[in-house]
Image (tube, rainbow, N blue to C red; front, top):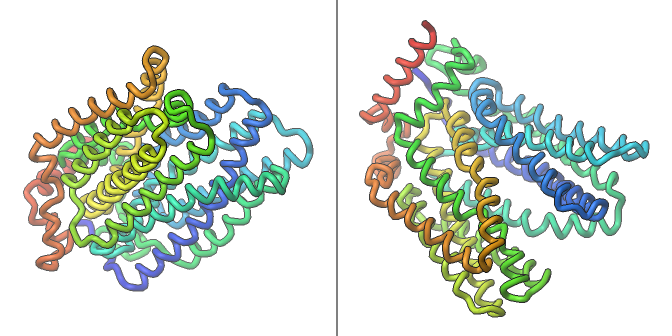
Length: 450
């Protein structure tokens, strides 16, 4: 039987320090990323090179994510975070040396972005999984809301800081930020231990003893997704993501071609969108209502309606467009924070790395296809028509999800946490569905061992 370390105030405080150190590292990484993209833009002026840079970062992240999920559940999480941060810092340091020697080439930068993508692919499931190991369940939603706020503030501040840095420093000098911001992260991770998940009877530093094969643990993650009912939820959100998310990439064209605006209007769209995410996260943090899949679906439907309304805004009415982008940000915060929170509470801790990495692959892998689809369609119809078609299709997907009662009620029984003081583990033990999942995993384990 799997047991979990009790979450103490010291553990919670440790998580806060880890979160702060990770944001320090993220500041450096985002400023450097902005500088890299701008450098490629100035030096090449090529859309092909910029596309290659984006692909080099995203595709490795998607490819390694399923493997990263298993590794995140198997290995010491402190070690994983330190190693991945160190690899990013070292790859940046190598690039600094190449620039200093004057032998840098474009493929060196592309390779750096690929290394970043691989490291981020390994970091993502660890970063999500440690929340449920170190944060009390009644504080998970507020913590996720705070993460949303900080990410949005970084989204606003990083381009501005990056632009100032580019104006005052050489590109290789800016790269040093990535190296220096690794240091506080490493110190914090060396001083604060992330709790492990272990079987009863094992010592606290053994982790989960008697680990199965890599193949077995890889299959366990997919078995849980299939048996618990998450597969249909992931699939439907992937379809909605495939249809709607690429539309966000078309905002520059909507502003330029349809509204007749320019860079100033586009910057305001970005600011209002990030401001909406911040306000949405603050509202969620202040709310005492439990996160649920039902809440995620409602927010998704509202987001689709807002996109539909944006497609109907008369040309040149920028003030209405800004309001619409603010509303998009609020609803996106509602979707992301609630979805992550309910899954962190309901998914067994020893499976979270695998489940979250699988979710990332399923949902994100379709984004490039969506970009290609709407890019082709956009060559034949006005761009504002896409803002009518895409959310219309998305609403159909969400209405289908609403009709699927089992999905809509996923996680609702965990509201007992606030009424009778039961832990997630106690609720899971009383849950027939969880017993079915556990039996299925046990069956898979026997089959694989044979």
